Amino acid sequence: MFGKIDLKRSSYQLVVMLMVGAMILVGQFISSGIAITTALPGMLIMIAAAMLAMMLKDLFPKSIFPAFGFATIIGLFLSIPGNAVSDVFNTQVANINFMAITTPLLAFAGISVGNKIEDLKKMSWKIVVISLVVFTTIFFACASIAHIVLKMQGVI
Image (tube, rainbow, N blue to C red):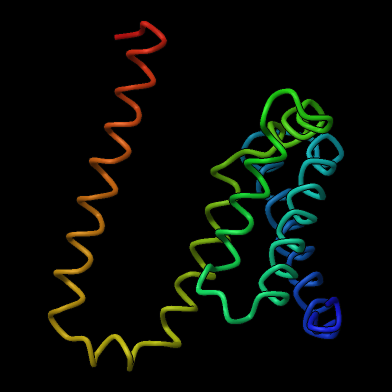
């Protein structure tokens, strides 16, 4: 079963994740003043969860479920109150500033889209319609969830 995991590719992914993690920690230190040593355990936990997600994707190559979907589910399970690791996970990951993560993430997303520019050209005007539908749906879904949660908490 574990023979499906490509160790060479996984080692490259780990190196890249460690480099990106270092960039995030330095960027966070510069922007927020949070010490690298304070945020390091949380970053290592996030990298471990991401690596697990990449390995799960390798184990199920025919799945249409993307690696970030696996990462989201892993993060959800690790953060659910009441499990054995949630206190440590939530405390350590809380030391990572979300905005520090977005900068390298958006840079890599831009590079990824740049590599697929010919495919985007083939889609022409249809990509605009699809984008508008997706953005609108996500906006209303997030607004609805936020409204429900705030209503349940009595904030509104």
